[in-house]
Image (cartoon, rainbow, N blue to C red; front, side):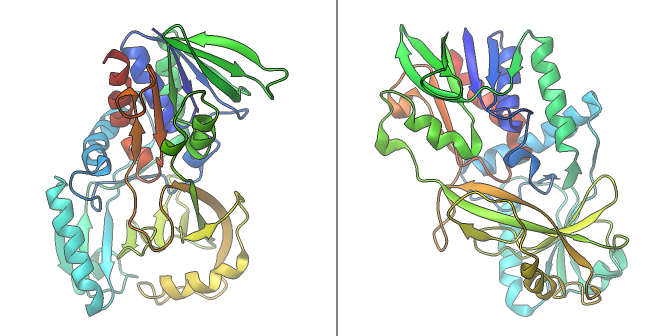
Length: 366
């Protein structure tokens, strides 16, 4: 089967790899001039253990499973990573029920090695940390996401697949049991190609691709809600050796300590609901960052945070609404053959990529 995957982010590449390993001929069409320039390159690069996600959700299924797959994959493919662990911390009595609820959900999700420790024990692990209770998650880690995507692309190419950069998708039309796909800058100068199957993994552009698909039910295209996450860098030596997370806030996991493999420490993301894509970090948001960080790191120095970068989560629900799960729409849902749309693939999409890739590739043989 000749398969087109739209989007060369981490999930698109994982889907393409899985399809190629299953014996399909695979092309990945990427609108940008490089792989992974969108959601996949603007996140915390965290390998999530699977703590938070509701029972029965795609996140709860794929995250712990894919996290185990990911550590094995990194080891076998030489992808830089570190299982550094994290502490989820309660800094007041009012946060304890929330922390206990996370622990209960994590156990339901099958996360290994969790333990509660008191503030004194937490300070022994992280001397700069101030909290009354912490939950230790030893399976959490960090990864070089770009090296991961390069490895996925290498696996795809080893199986005869390819990534076509600067290849935006204009239109899709059902044809002879497959799909005619127009690729190019516009309808006027786009080229038409035929594929047996199409998988839309376009991230922030997934809804646009669905609306450009002839015959796709308009009512099935979910709304796209943009939740911007801003990050601030720390001008100094890292104060922590593990990731430090507060109890989650609506829309995200709270302003947490993120480490990278180069040894840098940064903080974020916050949640900023926006109407249009933009990646500028407002330096004025630092005031709120200082306040939130000092709840667990009171010794954060003044004037030590600098605007770093921002990412945008492709959410399906907005401020004050219950968080939506990943949405995968195949022929059984929308009624069109050999077409799969992926919507709302936000955190923990990086961690879930390998498992999602296998799951989506199975649609091609069903």
